[in-house]
Image (cartoon, rainbow, N blue to C red):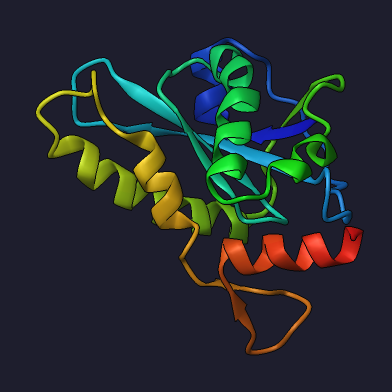
Length: 170
């Protein structure tokens, strides 16, 4: 599993940044991008994972990349189950060795900044994070429109992309 994290997240987690420019062209397993998101609550951050190819966003309520990596498989499995794509879980190869690099894709970071602005707004307006429904935001992001690089003027939601992947592997 390849994770591309922002320098800020790597510093918070005490992981030395390593640059690696070869992004995966395969739809799955693909690369996961990770960044911290402010919550508006003192000392509390969350980690936003974003799968560059499938456009899945997963929110882990921790500020440590090491802890978030441990939460990612369970949160992804629940996400895929909520959307009836649980059969795709093994295709993400989350049980393989973890390689952590710095982020290089400015377009992916731009998408993540838009997603994190939405998350940050709602988290900061929440009275408490103890019972916050992170699944709700993962589900809302499933309906965002994303530009598909291989198709000019073509937009798809995460659900559209997962359906396309389902048809490819079927």
